[in-house]
Image (tube, rainbow, N blue to C red):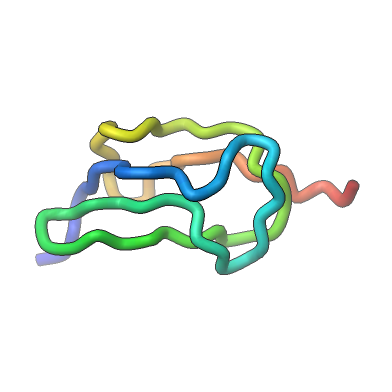
Length: 70
């Protein structure tokens, strides 16, 4: 049995921040453990779609990252 959902605890980055691939973005709490989800790409965080306290499904889109070069 795998994890099916988790609660957003804290965002480690703010909208407008630059992020690198593999950098921690958000803390998620599951039934067994807290985990830091990492950015899958480098870019600028342009929108947060899940706020602290929200319960989200595995593979849900939590944020939008613009990968267009500046």
